[in-house]
Length: 345
Image (cartoon, rainbow, N blue to C red):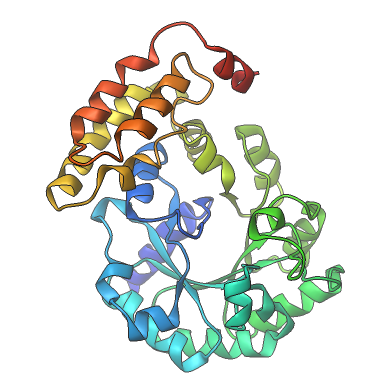
C-alpha cells in the first residue's frame, strides 16, 4: 500500500507541473471534460465548493464528474477546520486526487463567509484547517493563495503565511502572483488590475526549496511557462484556458515533452468531445450548458466568429441537439472576417 501511495503522489506531482485554474461558475464538469481533451496530462480543478454546500446540500450535484477528468482536484471554500475535514473525507470517498483550500478568492460572497483571500490574515486558522484535513484524508492537501491582501503586500507577509501553513504539513502552495483588493475591486478586476509580482513567488521557492510552488497569473503561452518553470515547480493557466482554450494543447505538449506535431486539430477535438456531449444530452443536460465552454475554440481562426455566433444563437433553443454543434464545425472554413483578423493580430 505504501508503494501504491508513493506512486500516486509521484503521478500527481508530475501533473502539477501544469494545472488549469478553478473559476467560479465556469469550471464545471463540462468545461473540465473539454479541457482534458486539450491538456491530457494537466491537473484539473473544480470550481470552489463551499463546505456549507457540501455538508447541507446536494453532494452528488457538487461532486460528480466524468472519469476522464482525472487527475482532478476538489477546491474547497471554508474556514472551519472540522467542516473542512468532513469535506476532505467526502473528496476521498468520491475519489478525487487532491483537496485544495481556497485562500485567494476576493469576491464579496466569500468575504461574507470569512474565507477565501480573507484567510491570508489568519495563517493560524489556515494551518489548523490544513492539519484537520490531513488527519481526515490520505489525499494531498494543498493551498491556493495570493501574494498579499489589501495593504498587506510585502513579501514578509506572504512568507509568514506560507511558513505557518507549511508547519501544519502543507507542502504544495499555488500562488496567484497578484495581491487581492478586498474592497473596491470586483473579482474580474482582481484578476487584472493589481500588478503581477512574479519575483515574490520565485523568492518563495528559493527560500523554501522543500515546498512545491506553483505560479498563477498572466500565463498565456509556451514561452511564459518555460520562463516560470525555470524558477518554480509548476504553472497554473487561468483566463487563457477559457478565452483561448486551444492554446492548452501546445502548452501541455511543451510542458510534458510530447510532440507538438501530434497535436489534434480543433475539428478533431470537437469530434472527440462529441460522445461526451451526446451522453450529457441523453441525460437531459441542455446543450447551452456545454457549448458555452467551446466558444473560444476557434479564436483567431478563419470562421471563428461564425462558429461562436452559431453556438450562441442556436444552442439555447428548445430541443437543441448535437446537430447544432456538428453544423457549426463546417462554418469555421473561409476567409478571416474583420473580427477574427483583429483577434489574430
